[in-house]
Image (tube, rainbow, N blue to C red):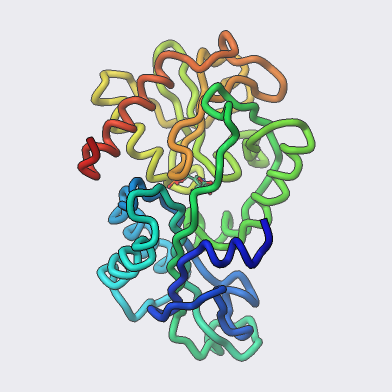
Length: 295
Ligand code: PDD
């Protein structure tokens, strides 16, 4: 696909103004320094899922970055509705970005002119691999995020350079997703997902305190597991937990729940999506239908 085709397929609002092709100032600190935060969510049949939860997290990210938006969530909700007009009845990829705004080419945020710039975009949902839900391979990659040792730890900051290189390494090793490994060997999350294993009929996933992105999908899966009487343990995971797991899966707003059937080349369980993974995915989809009033 050419860039022109792609950009024509995306509805973009910049500070509430329609912006074909999407342009921001070269002085924007998000562009210059990655001084911005974002949210990615999925719209089903033109309706955004879990928008409130995503906006709560967006505000938490802005607060951690010291970005004072000067507008409220209701404005973003309005703009999400506007960019989804073209996607009525269709599934869509929604991205909301807030940068600290234009600045004087200096890193010190005190030199930012502001006000923060908000971008709301809706794009066709990226096609997923046809066999995605048959299970994917995970590759462990040693990676620290730029925000890990800063007050922005756990925020969804735009600077995804560590995630980008982790993805490249995972791809080079024939895997679909990277499992990010901390210096102490703990596996925190995927380069663009949260991770779960099933052991002894229990669901185990790293705690938010481990510095992961507190995934919206992760939160719903934990709730649904508890409703289904599946014990949930939030604890650090290591490579051995994946290698000895009965099942494993990753979660993300765009892809929901994706079974993981190999970890660093080691087959997980019987190499097929497991029953708890499938049960939780069915419950997740039912939750989406119920919350969006979809039959
Ligand atoms: N990824 N961790 C990271 C580093 C992510 O980039 C994402 C989201 C998640 C899952 O969070 P949530 O369940 O709130 O989407 C965890 C995007 C959305 C994706 O690739 O699907």
